[in-house]
Image 1 (cartoon, helix red, strand yellow):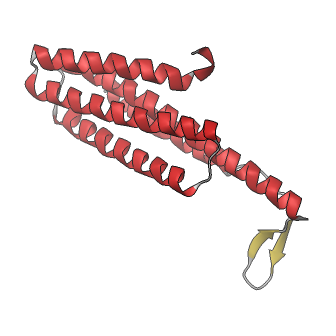
Image 2 (cartoon, helix red, strand yellow; image 1 turned 180 degrees about the vertical axis):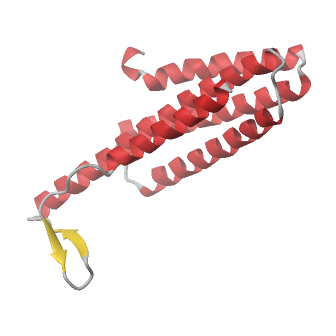
Image 3 (spheres, rainbow, N blue to C red; image 1 turned 120 degrees about the vertical axis):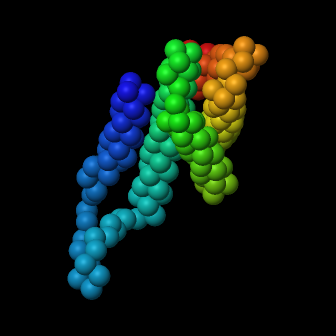
Length: 181
């Protein structure tokens, strides 16, 4: 039950984050009578460049925030699931959630790889994106190791998961609070 509540909270946080992106007021809008859409007209090339730079910056910041939040909440979910498995509360629900986590992290990684390929990044942004990709790899491995333990309940599989889980935590600390490292 607690895990279901955490899943709902995660979904709500992501919805609020995306909604906040679209709640900003655009400037100087003009209605195009033929298409019934609003278009924003830049005043000059310098203003266009500033606008595109601000949009790219906002998109990268949002991608980083949502990705790191996703990684952290995935880590928390895996921790909670491990506790439930250890306490004999494992069920088919856990199997489905672990499969969902693995497919979701794979999708997130694929989308971030496309972003890296399609968007011109400065070196610090590229380094951060590379760290995100590494973190999606290791958290996917974490989920896979928990799945193995979930199926076997073997001490060796538990130890493998716990070692990987600590490695994930260490990596998340570096990406969530880089100024402290």
